[in-house]
Length: 379
Image (cartoon, rainbow, N blue to C red; front, side, top):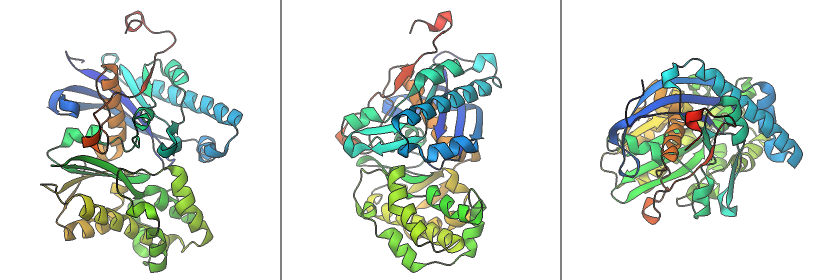
């Protein structure tokens, strides 16, 4: 049941790995310290994942190269897919626990903050119509308009787990890190992660490497490791963010030209990711008091990669802890639900990755269903 001062909200995340969408419904109540001095605790109501149909997955993988007409045709069908998926999820939820608002992050087609834009596929009007729910999307462009990167967005949810943890590592398609220290909050992308691993797994006919079993059989290719580590993005100081196009052009295209093979590629990529994390912690997290790292994202299931990361974190005195299974898989959906809930209440829902230079802001465009219920018609 909904209670006074609580809000039921949902989040949908389409990650950069193109494996599908994660969806979660949560109730937020007064409780733990949260964003901007507010207080929250949350309860999981529902969570599920849905793989993309092959036709949609293949179309999304080509979306940045489509003509304008074909792009909007794909966006229309993609948005209908998301809206109908959300509606089907709500059929499994008690009427008293239906979400009041859904935060949407569709597939990222372009992310170019230096040029002033970030584009996630998804038409809010179509999604709101087919889901019959108020939706919020386009969270990244307001912070970009203020000169930020628009990524990572994770500090908004990481704040709920601080001060129990002061470092937050998300191993998604792109690995990112949030640092809570005496100097404030930093958040930035580290390196390609599951996008890189899945690229090699597909050479073995798999979508991903279960538990890192293939990587564990491979050998470290030092030449390939040096090639991965040669890109100047790694030495760039934060705030910084990676786009899918940059991962493809900087890493995946060169791999296709001189692949070390699936096993050695996976083994070496795990080492590259672990080393990138270790270097970032040494360079930017020295002032953290606890040095406790909460790990989430699909990469947390990769036991081999986690062991390699732990080797570097142990060496530097950091303590690595994986989140519970639901948090590992649905943290980004939780983030979007929180951002949507706060947007609905006109409260700040975005923390800049270099917090001491900019205030927390309100971001996200709101779309109502075309035929709302009478009590939803006035906001």
